[in-house]
Amino acid sequence: MKYFIQISFLLIILISCQGEKEDSLGKTDWTTRKSEVTNYSAFFLGQTYLPVYSHIYHIHEHKTFDLTITVSIRNVSRTDSIYILKADYYNTSGDNIRKYIKKPIYLKPTETVEIIISEQDNEGGSGANFVFDWAVNNDKNPPLFEAVMISTSGQQGLSFTTRGIQVFD
Image 1 (cartoon, rainbow, N blue to C red):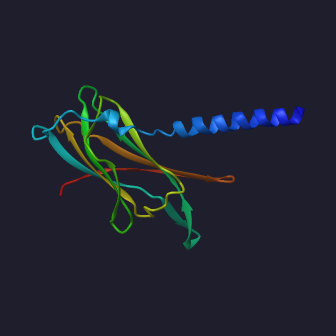
Image 2 (image 1 turned 60 degrees about the horizontal axis):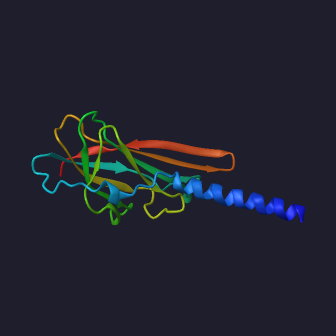
Image 3 (image 1 turned 60 degrees about the vertical axis):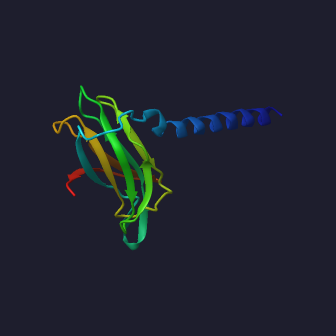
């Protein structure tokens, strides 16, 4: 009976810690960030392409290493809010597989929001990417888009970053 109580107590602690871990992944409630601006014609509009990798190849082309992706959307301005109008996720073939922001959101000065794509979600492939549409008060401080890809397996760990580039379509 003594061991049953100890094991039960350990299981409760383990389950509660897993719940906390999931909540700490930077999940963003996009509805609380909804922009009240309805007309962006007075703003400087831009678009950024961000390469990401849901897996990479190792040893040969048929063996892959799955990665967790953390997309970081950063407002580098210390005085102005920025507006993210779209955040579309594309796979290696260029197909839009997910729309993360369906209505424009805002970021306060120096604020960061994140998009997390789990290691098990390898739908994007080795050539996955995001395209962001955004609006700012002027062209001096465009938002910064970065991604961190990471994975660990046994004693092996792998991590690297990418940075978005502004595109002019």
